[in-house]
Amino acid sequence: MINNDMIQRGCPHFEKDELGLASCSKGCSGKLEVYDWLKDMPAGSSGNELAEIRFKNTRKGIYYNSNDLPLAKGDIVAVEAASGHDIGVVSLVGELVRYQNKKLNTALNELPKIYRKSKATDIEKWEASIALEHETMIQSRVISRELGLNMKIGDVEYQGDKTKAIFYYIADERVDFRQLIKNFAEQFKVRVEMRQIGARQEAGRIGGIGPCGRELCCSTFVTSFVSVSTTAARVQELSLNPQKLAGQCGKLKCCLNYEMDAYMDASAGFPSTEIPLETLLGKAYHFKTDVFRGIMWYSFQKDGNGEIIPLATERVNEIIKENKKGIISEIQRPEAKPQAKKELDFSNVVGEESINRFDDVNRKNNKNSRNRKNKRPQRNNQPPAGNPKP
Image (cartoon, rainbow, N blue to C red; front, top):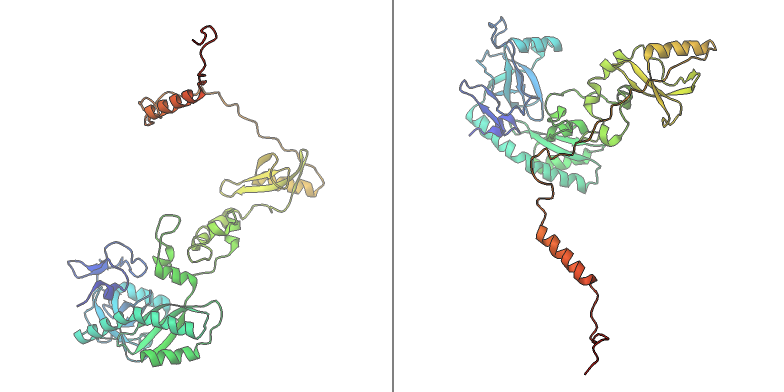
């Protein structure tokens, strides 16, 4: 029985439509899903010569359909592996795969081959190997902890024929896992491959929601992770706050690189912010910059607590040139625009009597009456002076 976890390997919304095409109904498999924008075009000379096959943990590759099998998106096939065979899901066929392979510049004889569509025995063995992955991961973590290795095993992927297992791990430093591989081979009776992944790849595998309200980029469409430095934050005039700039992986957010090129192009002719301006009002220091508006703010105090004057970048370049010639430039303070006094209207716009309408009025009155009773002077037991005691 083929279940959704076998096909999508982690996506619970993966299903096939009426035409037999497999896809994610919730759109959460965007990283593995490929939109075939050439599917309405007539088939070229390549036909089904190439196919893109996906596996677990965003692992995918282009395979050569040497037997000219009639493949469709969502078919489960047996493909060539380093030793034995592996089971994967067809994610793309047709002309678009040929364009992808042309970009990779890989010859057909160098591509791994597609053996056949998976048989019932292949599916059963594949299902049994998938069921062992979670238990194997837990046991492998225990073994690595007993050996005292500073590493974390994040996931395990069995090959389709159940003869090989890939252990994905995270480590901050180099790990000597020669003894670990021996223990794994004795415990699980399979060939072992250790594959190191980074913190960004681990976050993409787990998934989550970012501060922007959308699903994490690393778990949807980002496949190649480039280094992100604090230079991207400085160029975009962002506050160097580690708590705001770090993502769920603990590294700088990948989205800091998205608009960096636009900021660098817009600020190409901007003067250096390290140069103070000599003006008749005093020495002005750079405070902040609006890149796309081309405005730079300067303050007469280094800490920026004083008066702040906006200047256009062209004017700043002119002042710097004049200062180099020994001329103290003149700048004008921005005119304060008079603000018209507005009468505050405290009318009840909601149309209800008061915001205190939910208060317990009786309780408040009872409390006030108790306070007045406590403040009332006590009477003496002696009679008044005009009435002598009989």
